[in-house]
Length: 342
Image 1: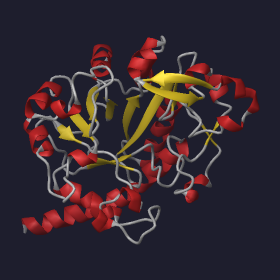
Image 2 (image 1 turned 45 degrees about the vertical axis):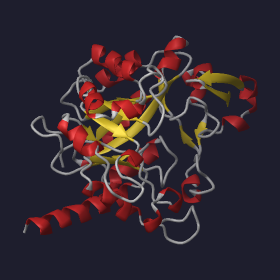
Image 3 (image 1 turned 180 degrees about the vertical axis):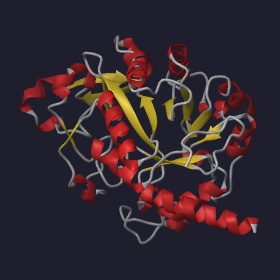
C-alpha cells in the first residue's frame, strides 16, 4: 500500500484510509492507544490535531479547551484556570491549553468525548495527553513493528487565534516534523488547515505537502470574505492547487442527500487535487437513512456501505473513526472494480 499520491496522477492506486484522531470510535481520541489501534486495524495514515501550551509545546488535542476531552474539570488545583475566551469569533468557557505548561498538561488524563454514545471507548479513559513530538516517535515505533510506513496527517488548530496571543503553531509544528524526519515532500506526511494563510506559512518553513480543509458552510477564519462555497468552484480549486496538493471537504460536499455525486470530486481532480472527505462514523446518528439500523441514534448502522458509496464517487481517501469499517469498504470497492474490469 502506497502512503502517498503519485506525481503523475491525482489518485493513488487505492484510496487511503485515514484514522481520524486514531481510531476514535473505539478509543478516546488523540491518544497513543487510539493511534496504535488505528495502525493495528490497517490505517495508512493517522490524523491528529495539535494546540500549543503556555510554553509553546504542541500537544495532541482537537480542542484548545480541555473540558470535553480531559479530566481537568475534576482537578481542584486547576479550578481557578477556568475562564472565557473568544476563539475564531466564538465565545467559549472552560480551561485552555495556553494557560497550562506542558508539565501541567502531562498531569491531565484523556477522557472519551462522546461517553454516552461510545461507552466501550470510555473504558479506556485515563490515558496521558501526548505531545506532538512524543506522538511522532510513537508512530515511528509502530511503523517499525508493523513493517510498513505510517502516514501522519496533522492539523494545527485555530492558527489565527493562537498567533494573536503569541503562540503561532506553524514554526513548532515544522520543528517537530523536522526532528522526526518528516518535514519534506517525500515523507508520508500531510499538514492540513481550514485556514489558507497558515498553509502558506507552513510552505515558507518546509516543503511538506499541504491540504486545504473545507467546511460545508462559512469561510476560513483568516479569510472571512472568501466562503468555502467559492473555494469549491472550478476557479477556486485551481487557486488552491497553487499551494496545496489536495482538499479535505466535509463529506456532505461530495454526495447530495439523495446519494448522487456533486461536481466536487470531478472538479478537484481536474485541478490536480486529491479529495479526502471527513468524517465517516458508524453510528446511526451520522449515517444516511438507508444505512441506519434500528431507531437508536447511538447504535451502529452500516458504515461500510456508507463509506463504499463515497469510494464509488471517486474520492481518494477517507477520514474515519472506525478504521476497520473503512478497510472493509475499500476491500468491497476493490472487489467491485476487479469484477467490472473482467
